[in-house]
Image 1 (cartoon, helix red, strand yellow):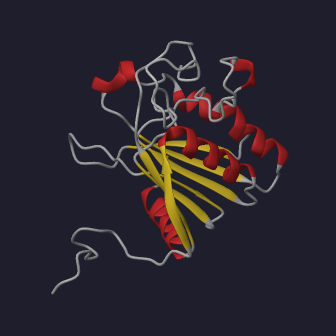
Image 2 (image 1 turned 180 degrees about the horizontal axis):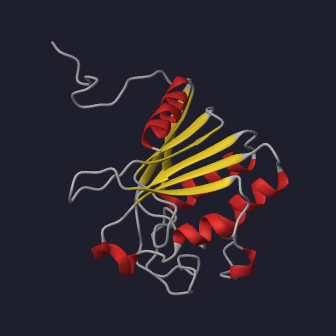
Length: 202
């Protein structure tokens, strides 16, 4: 019997994981990413379909935006505090059809208003009509997050998925519908493999 996973046919590579698990919904993933990135020594790599500079990673439950942790401010602060840290962000160079759904002038926001060791790049190496959905982050080659969640607006939610949640709002304070997705986390060789994938794509 042939193995289910075959490199080059239905998967990119196969690697061992020293530890792995699931983070259910954006609340758990955003908080885990915030903790891991906050302890980074050398680098943080982030690949995604979409990003928003003002999306809040950690929300205190009061609905007070001043107590939340916005993505770009957090990443820039990490670079300001650690002279050895580098952060690389690779985003899909989206089709104009999605223009109204995206934050405008991202290259300017992420590159020209931040520390020089925080670098943002659009990825446009795709077939016509295609887009990448590789949503992952790697910290120091030690831990990786991989799954269906981007660090962007309208994705954060907790497991209750209440119809009305004061924390489920975007940066402009508009609420959005409940959102469910999963992100996995991995330690070990699999995280190092994702570093190589990021290098190939960037």
